[in-house]
Image (tube, rainbow, N blue to C red; front, side):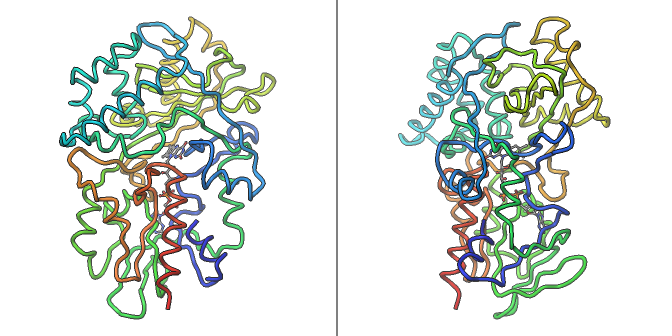
Length: 416
Ligand SMILES: Cc1cc2nc3c(=O)[nH]c(=O)nc-3n(C[C@H](O)[C@H](O)[C@H](O)COP(=O)(O)OP(=O)(O)OC[C@H]3O[C@@H](n4cnc5c(N)ncnc54)[C@H](O)[C@@H]3O)c2cc1C
Protein backbone atom coordinates (compact mmCIF):
# COMPACT_ATOMS: atom_id res chain seq x y z
CA UNK A 1 0.00 0.00 0.00
CA UNK A 2 2.94 2.31 0.67
CA UNK A 3 4.28 1.93 -2.89
CA UNK A 4 0.81 2.14 -4.42
CA UNK A 5 0.09 5.38 -2.52
CA UNK A 6 3.43 6.90 -3.59
CA UNK A 7 3.08 5.95 -7.25
CA UNK A 8 -0.50 7.20 -7.38
CA UNK A 9 0.75 10.52 -5.96
CA UNK A 10 3.30 10.80 -8.77
CA UNK A 11 6.39 9.32 -7.08
CA UNK A 12 7.09 7.08 -10.05
CA UNK A 13 10.62 6.12 -8.94
CA UNK A 14 9.29 3.94 -6.17
CA UNK A 15 10.76 0.43 -6.10
CA UNK A 16 9.75 -2.55 -3.92
CA UNK A 17 12.55 -4.97 -3.02
CA UNK A 18 10.82 -8.22 -2.10
CA UNK A 19 12.71 -11.17 -0.64
CA UNK A 20 10.38 -13.89 -1.85
CA UNK A 21 9.72 -15.14 -5.36
CA UNK A 22 6.16 -13.92 -4.96
CA UNK A 23 4.75 -10.73 -3.49
CA UNK A 24 1.99 -10.34 -0.91
CA UNK A 25 3.91 -11.36 2.24
CA UNK A 26 1.61 -13.26 4.56
CA UNK A 27 -1.14 -13.17 1.94
CA UNK A 28 -0.78 -16.44 0.05
CA UNK A 29 -3.74 -18.01 -1.74
CA UNK A 30 -3.38 -21.58 -3.03
CA UNK A 31 -5.40 -22.16 -6.21
CA UNK A 32 -4.07 -25.69 -6.84
CA UNK A 33 -5.18 -27.67 -3.82
CA UNK A 34 -8.94 -27.56 -4.45
CA UNK A 35 -9.35 -27.48 -8.22
CA UNK A 36 -8.98 -23.75 -8.72
CA UNK A 37 -10.96 -22.66 -5.69
CA UNK A 38 -9.01 -20.23 -3.51
CA UNK A 39 -7.57 -21.71 -0.33
CA UNK A 40 -5.97 -19.19 2.01
CA UNK A 41 -2.68 -20.35 3.51
CA UNK A 42 -2.23 -16.97 5.23
CA UNK A 43 -4.83 -14.34 6.12
CA UNK A 44 -8.38 -15.07 5.05
CA UNK A 45 -10.71 -12.46 6.54
CA UNK A 46 -11.33 -8.73 6.40
CA UNK A 47 -12.30 -7.92 9.97
CA UNK A 48 -15.07 -5.38 10.39
CA UNK A 49 -17.66 -3.98 8.00
CA UNK A 50 -15.82 -0.94 6.67
CA UNK A 51 -12.32 0.35 6.24
CA UNK A 52 -9.35 0.48 3.94
CA UNK A 53 -9.67 -3.10 2.63
CA UNK A 54 -13.37 -2.78 1.90
CA UNK A 55 -12.69 0.42 -0.10
CA UNK A 56 -9.78 -1.23 -1.92
CA UNK A 57 -11.81 -4.33 -2.80
CA UNK A 58 -14.55 -2.13 -4.20
CA UNK A 59 -12.07 -0.10 -6.24
CA UNK A 60 -10.51 -3.32 -7.58
CA UNK A 61 -13.89 -4.83 -8.43
CA UNK A 62 -13.61 -7.80 -6.08
CA UNK A 63 -16.49 -9.66 -4.46
CA UNK A 64 -16.66 -9.79 -0.68
CA UNK A 65 -18.67 -12.45 1.09
CA UNK A 66 -19.54 -12.22 4.74
CA UNK A 67 -18.64 -15.29 6.79
CA UNK A 68 -21.46 -16.65 8.96
CA UNK A 69 -21.07 -15.49 12.53
CA UNK A 70 -22.88 -18.38 14.25
CA UNK A 71 -20.57 -20.94 15.68
CA UNK A 72 -20.34 -24.14 17.63
CA UNK A 73 -18.20 -24.85 20.63
CA UNK A 74 -16.73 -28.19 21.65
CA UNK A 75 -16.05 -28.89 25.29
CA UNK A 76 -16.90 -31.57 27.78
CA UNK A 77 -17.25 -34.07 24.91
CA UNK A 78 -20.11 -32.23 23.26
CA UNK A 79 -20.81 -29.66 20.56
CA UNK A 80 -23.08 -26.76 21.50
CA UNK A 81 -24.36 -23.74 19.59
CA UNK A 82 -22.82 -20.65 21.05
CA UNK A 83 -24.85 -17.77 19.58
CA UNK A 84 -22.33 -14.99 20.08
CA UNK A 85 -21.28 -16.17 23.54
CA UNK A 86 -17.63 -16.42 22.57
CA UNK A 87 -17.33 -12.87 21.25
CA UNK A 88 -19.35 -11.43 24.14
CA UNK A 89 -17.15 -13.25 26.68
CA UNK A 90 -13.94 -12.04 25.04
CA UNK A 91 -15.43 -8.52 24.88
CA UNK A 92 -16.30 -8.60 28.60
CA UNK A 93 -12.81 -9.78 29.50
CA UNK A 94 -11.19 -7.10 27.35
CA UNK A 95 -13.43 -4.49 28.87
CA UNK A 96 -12.46 -5.63 32.38
CA UNK A 97 -8.78 -5.49 31.40
CA UNK A 98 -9.27 -1.96 30.06
CA UNK A 99 -10.96 -0.83 33.28
CA UNK A 100 -8.15 -2.28 35.38
CA UNK A 101 -5.48 -0.52 33.33
CA UNK A 102 -7.41 2.77 33.38
CA UNK A 103 -7.74 2.61 37.14
CA UNK A 104 -3.99 2.30 37.55
CA UNK A 105 -3.38 -1.45 37.76
CA UNK A 106 -0.05 -2.36 36.17
CA UNK A 107 -0.05 -4.48 33.04
CA UNK A 108 -0.03 -8.18 33.87
CA UNK A 109 0.18 -11.48 31.99
CA UNK A 110 -3.17 -12.74 30.68
CA UNK A 111 -2.62 -15.95 32.66
CA UNK A 112 -2.58 -13.98 35.98
CA UNK A 113 -5.52 -11.86 34.85
CA UNK A 114 -7.71 -14.89 34.06
CA UNK A 115 -7.40 -16.28 37.61
CA UNK A 116 -8.57 -13.03 39.24
CA UNK A 117 -12.04 -13.42 40.83
CA UNK A 118 -13.69 -10.85 38.51
CA UNK A 119 -12.33 -12.53 35.35
CA UNK A 120 -13.21 -16.00 36.63
CA UNK A 121 -16.77 -14.87 37.31
CA UNK A 122 -17.12 -13.76 33.68
CA UNK A 123 -15.88 -17.15 32.49
CA UNK A 124 -17.99 -19.16 34.94
CA UNK A 125 -21.15 -17.24 34.00
CA UNK A 126 -20.90 -18.65 30.48
CA UNK A 127 -21.36 -22.20 31.89
CA UNK A 128 -19.59 -23.38 28.75
CA UNK A 129 -16.07 -21.99 28.68
CA UNK A 130 -13.25 -22.85 31.03
CA UNK A 131 -10.14 -20.80 31.76
CA UNK A 132 -8.24 -23.31 29.62
CA UNK A 133 -10.53 -22.64 26.63
CA UNK A 134 -10.20 -18.87 27.03
CA UNK A 135 -6.41 -19.23 27.20
CA UNK A 136 -6.57 -21.28 23.99
CA UNK A 137 -8.59 -18.54 22.31
CA UNK A 138 -6.15 -15.82 23.36
CA UNK A 139 -3.32 -18.01 22.01
CA UNK A 140 -5.32 -18.25 18.82
CA UNK A 141 -6.01 -14.54 18.49
CA UNK A 142 -2.54 -13.27 19.43
CA UNK A 143 -0.25 -16.20 18.61
CA UNK A 144 1.23 -15.70 22.07
CA UNK A 145 1.39 -17.55 25.36
CA UNK A 146 -0.96 -16.27 28.10
CA UNK A 147 1.99 -16.15 30.51
CA UNK A 148 3.77 -13.70 28.20
CA UNK A 149 0.94 -11.75 26.53
CA UNK A 150 -0.03 -8.66 28.55
CA UNK A 151 -3.55 -7.37 29.20
CA UNK A 152 -2.48 -4.09 27.54
CA UNK A 153 -1.88 -6.31 24.50
CA UNK A 154 -5.40 -7.73 24.46
CA UNK A 155 -7.04 -4.32 24.62
CA UNK A 156 -5.02 -2.65 21.86
CA UNK A 157 -6.71 -4.32 18.88
CA UNK A 158 -9.83 -2.81 17.34
CA UNK A 159 -11.46 -6.13 16.52
CA UNK A 160 -11.69 -9.41 18.37
CA UNK A 161 -11.75 -11.34 15.13
CA UNK A 162 -14.99 -13.11 15.92
CA UNK A 163 -17.63 -10.77 14.47
CA UNK A 164 -18.18 -9.37 10.94
CA UNK A 165 -15.60 -11.20 8.87
CA UNK A 166 -15.47 -11.07 5.08
CA UNK A 167 -13.66 -13.14 2.48
CA UNK A 168 -12.54 -12.21 -0.99
CA UNK A 169 -14.37 -14.59 -3.30
CA UNK A 170 -11.59 -14.45 -5.90
CA UNK A 171 -8.92 -15.11 -3.23
CA UNK A 172 -6.86 -12.69 -1.09
CA UNK A 173 -3.89 -12.91 -3.47
CA UNK A 174 -6.06 -11.54 -6.24
CA UNK A 175 -6.54 -8.38 -4.18
CA UNK A 176 -2.76 -8.03 -3.89
CA UNK A 177 -2.23 -8.81 -7.58
CA UNK A 178 -4.70 -6.15 -8.70
CA UNK A 179 -3.45 -3.59 -6.15
CA UNK A 180 0.16 -4.10 -7.31
CA UNK A 181 -0.50 -3.62 -11.01
CA UNK A 182 2.00 -1.17 -12.52
CA UNK A 183 4.34 -1.17 -9.50
CA UNK A 184 8.06 -1.83 -9.90
CA UNK A 185 8.59 -4.95 -7.79
CA UNK A 186 11.97 -6.70 -7.73
CA UNK A 187 11.22 -10.21 -6.57
CA UNK A 188 13.71 -12.65 -5.07
CA UNK A 189 15.71 -9.72 -3.68
CA UNK A 190 16.28 -10.13 0.05
CA UNK A 191 17.86 -6.99 1.40
CA UNK A 192 20.83 -7.87 3.58
CA UNK A 193 21.92 -4.45 4.77
CA UNK A 194 20.94 -0.81 4.77
CA UNK A 195 23.66 1.81 5.08
CA UNK A 196 22.48 5.34 5.83
CA UNK A 197 25.90 6.80 6.68
CA UNK A 198 25.90 9.20 3.74
CA UNK A 199 23.68 12.27 3.95
CA UNK A 200 22.20 12.13 0.46
CA UNK A 201 21.98 8.40 -0.36
CA UNK A 202 20.92 5.28 1.43
CA UNK A 203 22.61 2.10 0.21
CA UNK A 204 20.68 -1.14 0.17
CA UNK A 205 22.59 -4.34 -0.36
CA UNK A 206 21.15 -7.62 -1.57
CA UNK A 207 22.92 -10.86 -2.50
CA UNK A 208 22.85 -9.82 -6.13
CA UNK A 209 23.37 -6.09 -6.20
CA UNK A 210 23.49 -2.73 -4.41
CA UNK A 211 20.77 -0.13 -4.77
CA UNK A 212 20.74 3.55 -3.90
CA UNK A 213 17.72 5.40 -2.56
CA UNK A 214 16.94 8.82 -1.13
CA UNK A 215 14.35 7.49 1.29
CA UNK A 216 13.51 3.99 2.48
CA UNK A 217 10.40 2.51 4.04
CA UNK A 218 11.14 -0.54 6.19
CA UNK A 219 8.03 -2.69 5.69
CA UNK A 220 9.68 -5.83 7.04
CA UNK A 221 7.86 -8.31 9.27
CA UNK A 222 8.57 -7.47 12.90
CA UNK A 223 10.16 -10.90 13.38
CA UNK A 224 12.69 -10.15 10.63
CA UNK A 225 13.61 -6.81 12.22
CA UNK A 226 13.89 -8.42 15.64
CA UNK A 227 16.00 -11.29 14.38
CA UNK A 228 18.47 -8.81 12.86
CA UNK A 229 18.30 -10.32 9.37
CA UNK A 230 18.88 -6.88 7.89
CA UNK A 231 22.05 -5.19 9.13
CA UNK A 232 21.72 -1.44 9.61
CA UNK A 233 24.68 1.01 9.54
CA UNK A 234 24.91 3.05 11.64
CA UNK A 235 22.71 1.04 14.03
CA UNK A 236 19.26 2.38 14.81
CA UNK A 237 19.02 4.88 17.71
CA UNK A 238 18.52 3.24 21.12
CA UNK A 239 14.80 4.08 21.38
CA UNK A 240 14.13 2.32 18.07
CA UNK A 241 16.17 -0.73 18.99
CA UNK A 242 14.48 -0.93 22.40
CA UNK A 243 11.05 -0.83 20.73
CA UNK A 244 12.07 -3.59 18.32
CA UNK A 245 13.17 -5.75 21.23
CA UNK A 246 10.15 -4.94 23.44
CA UNK A 247 7.42 -5.94 20.98
CA UNK A 248 6.91 -9.69 20.78
CA UNK A 249 6.21 -11.92 17.79
CA UNK A 250 3.66 -14.72 17.94
CA UNK A 251 3.47 -18.10 16.27
CA UNK A 252 0.57 -19.52 14.23
CA UNK A 253 -0.26 -22.18 11.70
CA UNK A 254 -3.08 -23.23 9.45
CA UNK A 255 -4.01 -26.79 8.47
CA UNK A 256 -6.53 -27.27 5.70
CA UNK A 257 -8.29 -30.60 5.17
CA UNK A 258 -10.36 -31.68 2.19
CA UNK A 259 -13.46 -33.87 2.38
CA UNK A 260 -15.76 -35.47 -0.17
CA UNK A 261 -18.76 -33.74 1.38
CA UNK A 262 -19.45 -31.39 4.25
CA UNK A 263 -20.39 -33.50 7.29
CA UNK A 264 -20.67 -30.63 9.75
CA UNK A 265 -23.90 -28.77 10.56
CA UNK A 266 -24.91 -26.06 8.10
CA UNK A 267 -24.95 -23.43 10.86
CA UNK A 268 -21.28 -24.02 11.71
CA UNK A 269 -19.69 -20.74 10.65
CA UNK A 270 -16.83 -21.66 12.94
CA UNK A 271 -16.03 -24.15 15.64
CA UNK A 272 -14.07 -23.25 18.74
CA UNK A 273 -12.68 -26.10 20.76
CA UNK A 274 -10.89 -26.78 24.00
CA UNK A 275 -8.70 -29.22 22.04
CA UNK A 276 -5.32 -28.22 20.61
CA UNK A 277 -6.75 -27.22 17.23
CA UNK A 278 -8.47 -24.23 18.94
CA UNK A 279 -10.53 -22.89 16.02
CA UNK A 280 -11.96 -24.36 12.81
CA UNK A 281 -14.05 -22.97 9.99
CA UNK A 282 -15.38 -24.23 6.67
CA UNK A 283 -14.48 -22.58 3.37
CA UNK A 284 -16.92 -20.28 1.64
CA UNK A 285 -20.26 -22.01 1.06
CA UNK A 286 -19.73 -21.37 -2.68
CA UNK A 287 -16.45 -23.21 -2.41
CA UNK A 288 -17.84 -26.09 -0.41
CA UNK A 289 -20.40 -27.55 -2.76
CA UNK A 290 -21.18 -31.22 -2.64
CA UNK A 291 -20.14 -32.26 -6.11
CA UNK A 292 -16.58 -31.05 -5.68
CA UNK A 293 -15.17 -31.29 -2.22
CA UNK A 294 -15.47 -29.47 1.07
CA UNK A 295 -12.77 -27.77 3.07
CA UNK A 296 -12.18 -27.25 6.76
CA UNK A 297 -9.41 -25.05 8.08
CA UNK A 298 -7.95 -25.03 11.55
CA UNK A 299 -6.02 -22.00 12.74
CA UNK A 300 -3.76 -22.60 15.74
CA UNK A 301 -1.73 -20.07 17.69
CA UNK A 302 0.92 -19.96 20.39
CA UNK A 303 2.97 -22.77 21.82
CA UNK A 304 0.42 -25.38 20.70
CA UNK A 305 1.65 -24.91 17.12
CA UNK A 306 4.87 -26.74 17.99
CA UNK A 307 3.04 -30.06 18.37
CA UNK A 308 1.77 -29.83 14.80
CA UNK A 309 5.10 -28.58 13.47
CA UNK A 310 7.03 -31.63 14.57
CA UNK A 311 5.96 -34.29 12.04
CA UNK A 312 7.90 -34.05 8.84
CA UNK A 313 5.26 -35.44 6.51
CA UNK A 314 2.15 -33.58 5.39
CA UNK A 315 0.08 -36.75 5.85
CA UNK A 316 1.05 -36.90 9.55
CA UNK A 317 0.03 -33.28 10.11
CA UNK A 318 -3.28 -34.01 8.38
CA UNK A 319 -3.84 -37.05 10.59
CA UNK A 320 -3.15 -35.09 13.79
CA UNK A 321 -5.72 -32.48 12.81
CA UNK A 322 -8.19 -35.14 11.63
CA UNK A 323 -7.85 -36.94 14.98
CA UNK A 324 -9.15 -33.86 16.74
CA UNK A 325 -12.14 -33.75 14.37
CA UNK A 326 -12.77 -37.44 15.09
CA UNK A 327 -13.12 -36.56 18.77
CA UNK A 328 -15.66 -33.83 18.05
CA UNK A 329 -17.92 -35.47 15.43
CA UNK A 330 -19.87 -38.75 15.57
CA UNK A 331 -17.79 -41.88 15.07
CA UNK A 332 -17.02 -42.70 11.48
CA UNK A 333 -18.19 -39.42 9.87
CA UNK A 334 -14.73 -37.93 9.44
CA UNK A 335 -13.25 -41.14 8.03
CA UNK A 336 -16.12 -41.60 5.58
CA UNK A 337 -15.51 -38.18 4.07
CA UNK A 338 -11.81 -37.37 4.42
CA UNK A 339 -9.67 -37.08 1.29
CA UNK A 340 -5.92 -37.44 1.16
CA UNK A 341 -5.29 -33.86 -0.03
CA UNK A 342 -4.38 -31.28 2.61
CA UNK A 343 -2.28 -28.20 3.07
CA UNK A 344 -0.57 -26.56 5.98
CA UNK A 345 1.34 -23.37 6.52
CA UNK A 346 3.56 -22.65 9.51
CA UNK A 347 4.61 -19.16 10.53
CA UNK A 348 7.17 -19.80 13.25
CA UNK A 349 10.44 -18.02 13.92
CA UNK A 350 12.34 -20.40 11.63
CA UNK A 351 10.57 -19.14 8.52
CA UNK A 352 13.21 -16.90 6.98
CA UNK A 353 11.18 -14.05 5.50
CA UNK A 354 8.58 -13.75 8.24
CA UNK A 355 10.13 -15.08 11.50
CA UNK A 356 6.75 -15.34 13.17
CA UNK A 357 3.08 -14.73 12.48
CA UNK A 358 2.35 -11.25 13.88
CA UNK A 359 3.32 -8.96 16.73
CA UNK A 360 1.94 -8.70 20.27
CA UNK A 361 2.66 -6.72 23.42
CA UNK A 362 4.25 -8.83 26.18
CA UNK A 363 3.23 -8.02 29.76
CA UNK A 364 5.05 -4.96 31.06
CA UNK A 365 6.00 -3.78 27.57
CA UNK A 366 6.60 -0.05 27.14
CA UNK A 367 3.11 1.23 26.24
CA UNK A 368 4.71 3.61 23.71
CA UNK A 369 6.73 0.89 21.98
CA UNK A 370 4.61 0.94 18.81
CA UNK A 371 4.86 4.76 18.53
CA UNK A 372 8.64 4.45 18.90
CA UNK A 373 8.71 1.72 16.27
CA UNK A 374 6.81 3.76 13.70
CA UNK A 375 8.77 7.00 14.31
CA UNK A 376 10.82 7.94 11.19
CA UNK A 377 14.59 8.39 11.53
CA UNK A 378 16.27 11.46 10.16
CA UNK A 379 13.37 12.12 7.72
CA UNK A 380 14.90 9.41 5.54
CA UNK A 381 13.99 6.05 7.06
CA UNK A 382 10.33 5.25 7.59
CA UNK A 383 8.49 2.28 9.06
CA UNK A 384 5.37 0.39 8.01
CA UNK A 385 3.85 -3.02 8.70
CA UNK A 386 1.27 -4.34 11.14
CA UNK A 387 3.60 -3.98 14.15
CA UNK A 388 3.77 -0.20 13.61
CA UNK A 389 -0.02 0.21 13.93
CA UNK A 390 -1.01 2.60 16.67
CA UNK A 391 -4.66 2.77 15.67
CA UNK A 392 -5.75 -0.72 16.70
CA UNK A 393 -4.80 -2.55 13.52
CA UNK A 394 -2.00 -4.72 14.88
CA UNK A 395 -1.76 -8.30 13.65
CA UNK A 396 -4.12 -7.59 10.78
CA UNK A 397 -4.02 -6.92 7.08
CA UNK A 398 -6.05 -3.74 7.45
CA UNK A 399 -3.53 -2.45 10.01
CA UNK A 400 -0.62 -3.27 7.70
CA UNK A 401 -2.41 -1.55 4.79
CA UNK A 402 -3.21 1.59 6.81
CA UNK A 403 0.39 1.74 8.03
CA UNK A 404 1.60 1.65 4.41
CA UNK A 405 -0.53 4.65 3.50
CA UNK A 406 0.64 6.48 6.63
CA UNK A 407 4.33 5.79 5.87
CA UNK A 408 3.88 6.95 2.25
CA UNK A 409 2.32 10.20 3.48
CA UNK A 410 5.26 10.74 5.85
CA UNK A 411 7.69 10.22 2.94
CA UNK A 412 5.82 12.70 0.73
CA UNK A 413 5.73 15.31 3.49
CA UNK A 414 9.48 15.01 3.87
CA UNK A 415 10.45 15.03 0.20
CA UNK A 416 12.43 18.06 -0.83
C1 LIG B 1 -1.72 -17.79 9.17
C2 LIG B 1 -2.13 -16.34 9.31
C3 LIG B 1 -3.47 -16.00 9.22
C4 LIG B 1 -3.85 -14.65 9.35
N1 LIG B 1 -5.17 -14.33 9.22
C5 LIG B 1 -5.51 -13.03 9.17
C6 LIG B 1 -6.84 -12.67 8.81
O1 LIG B 1 -7.70 -13.53 8.55
N2 LIG B 1 -7.13 -11.34 8.76
C7 LIG B 1 -6.20 -10.37 9.03
O2 LIG B 1 -6.53 -9.18 8.95
N3 LIG B 1 -4.92 -10.69 9.35
C8 LIG B 1 -4.57 -11.99 9.43
N4 LIG B 1 -3.28 -12.34 9.69
C9 LIG B 1 -2.30 -11.26 10.00
C10 LIG B 1 -1.85 -10.54 8.73
O3 LIG B 1 -1.60 -11.48 7.72
C11 LIG B 1 -0.59 -9.73 8.99
O4 LIG B 1 -0.76 -8.92 10.12
C12 LIG B 1 -0.26 -8.82 7.80
O5 LIG B 1 -0.43 -9.49 6.59
C13 LIG B 1 1.17 -8.33 7.95
O6 LIG B 1 1.50 -7.53 6.87
P1 LIG B 1 2.92 -6.82 6.82
O7 LIG B 1 2.96 -6.05 5.55
O8 LIG B 1 3.18 -6.13 8.11
O9 LIG B 1 3.96 -8.04 6.76
P2 LIG B 1 4.17 -9.15 5.65
O10 LIG B 1 2.88 -9.48 5.00
O11 LIG B 1 4.93 -10.24 6.29
O12 LIG B 1 5.09 -8.42 4.57
C14 LIG B 1 6.45 -8.19 4.77
C15 LIG B 1 7.21 -8.46 3.50
O13 LIG B 1 8.62 -8.29 3.73
C16 LIG B 1 9.30 -9.28 2.95
N5 LIG B 1 10.66 -9.47 3.47
C17 LIG B 1 11.06 -10.16 4.55
N6 LIG B 1 12.40 -10.06 4.71
C18 LIG B 1 12.86 -9.29 3.69
C19 LIG B 1 14.15 -8.81 3.30
N7 LIG B 1 15.26 -9.10 4.00
N8 LIG B 1 14.24 -8.05 2.17
C20 LIG B 1 13.14 -7.74 1.43
N9 LIG B 1 11.89 -8.15 1.77
C21 LIG B 1 11.75 -8.90 2.90
C22 LIG B 1 8.42 -10.51 3.09
O14 LIG B 1 8.72 -11.46 2.09
C23 LIG B 1 7.04 -9.88 2.97
O15 LIG B 1 6.59 -9.82 1.62
C24 LIG B 1 -2.87 -13.66 9.58
C25 LIG B 1 -1.52 -14.01 9.66
C26 LIG B 1 -1.15 -15.33 9.52
C27 LIG B 1 0.30 -15.68 9.61
